[in-house]
Length: 481
Ligand code: NAD
Image 1 (spheres, rainbow, N blue to C red):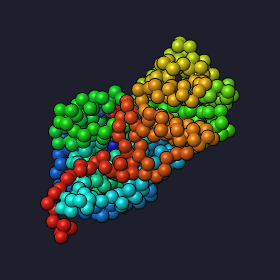
Image 2: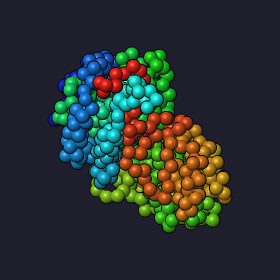
Image 3: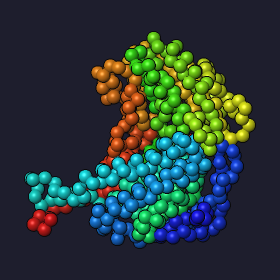
């Protein structure tokens, strides 16, 4: 077992240059479950130097060689899925069955989809028959800094590390200090897979330390970031000095438009989706917009789903939801619930305080507000907890206007049996993704948003292209292809 305080730099586990212990808190119990070290700027510099030294050789490997290593990594990852699920469950509170079924497995799902996309990509190709001596080459951007959050740790790490590896980039990963254990395990597997030293490096740390250093570092060509809009702005500003490419995957305030002709399960599905991962998903359908004739019935269904949603420790098997990640997040959610009540929304389930019978752990009562008005704080801001806002509407145009009147634009949802309406709305909703009638996006579909949700596109060939530069070449000797 590795020492959790160590970083993975240049193919070896190394202690921090300056000791700076940081406890990892199990959100189910509030107990310390591990101790990591927060790196300093000097640790970040050492990792960047290793990545820089490894770049020329890794960038010039034949694509098939990179693919073979990623495939070897995938096999190792799949053989250790249970360890991964346990690490995630412990560090951020996902119930163990859910951690097994979706948190850990999001990693291999993305890796597989990247492998498929990669196999069909051409890294050097003709511009067209009109310019026989032109070539378009796709080349790795260089050393990349990858900064990830705690809510879906392996989802986000796999969405960044895999395409960077396939593209031929070398990298420094800084996972969230709230959920470092899964990434330490990921690094162990990278080592076992046998990637050349310096290709993948991991330094734990916080945003102000390692995160800020990577964002400013002159040898880092790109930052790929997932997390809060606040940090996304700070990173963009810091990265401007060296004109890095910055890709941002930020928050959301998704609308779920439920029409009177929606299928019978649409409301229940929407509420459960909102509560999944204790509401800590950027694409959560947090605003449920319901057509007036079925609104009262929808509120009743939402109340009953919320009241029957069990809350419990992450280590327990079952379909309950776990705690939220930390005290700060818990306090913030309580603040939003109080604000909803104060601004006049109708509390129909859940509310302030810990669920009945609980006195420890960062547990939130599954909460539903009805009669939420556009413009209320709980309608505008991302809560990142199990709190649903329900809003009635009378016309399709009104629903679209409410859905689009948000600073965010990640995922919107539509529930209707009318195919023409669904297709119309899919084009009118301002977001990077639209999911309808409970159908999730297919393998290789790009994940990303517009407006304050950031403008990254992760997954499939779009996700690999984010790590590539396009080079235009003329005068190519086409007899020597
Ligand atoms: P955060 O943005 O503070 O942290 C995410 C990552 O960014 C972490 O690794 C953190 O160390 C790093 N970071 C923070 N500030 C940084 C900076 N100035 N420079 C470089 N790196 C920095 O998110 P959080 O505090 O973990 O959560 C706060 C809010 O972020 C949540 O309430 C939620 O709204 C949002 N969030 C969104 C997502 C998403 O997937 N869209 C994920 C997690 C959190």
